[in-house]
Length: 110
Image 1 (cartoon, rainbow, N blue to C red):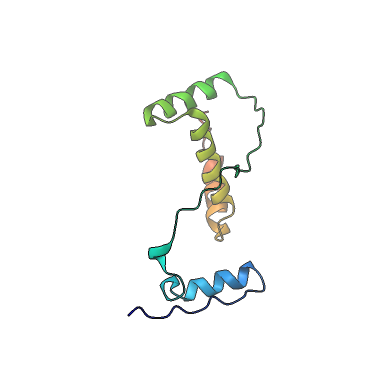
Image 2: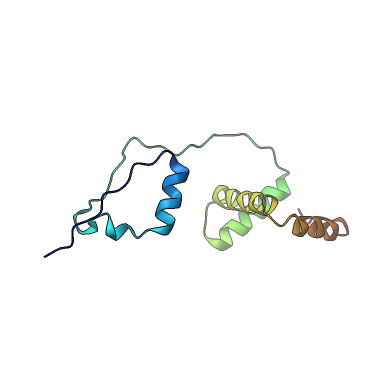
């Protein structure tokens, strides 16, 4: 005989729900054996097309790097931008300050 599943509580907001699921096992609330794959055919990623002017040499070097990794160059550019944004928003601002000082003594290869 299967154990009765607990009822998922009502949440006031997404933050309360996040905190709840961070400390509770979903197996106590959801019968995953009955779960079905959800398909959202009309869901589109929130993307914005932009135009970006780059020096030809920089674009060439990005394309070479992308080719070495066997990925589209636009995808590699997004990855590079994302990594830099994550670094900028890092909680430890000291790292950014120390890397900026090191960067000042070096000229960018791009």
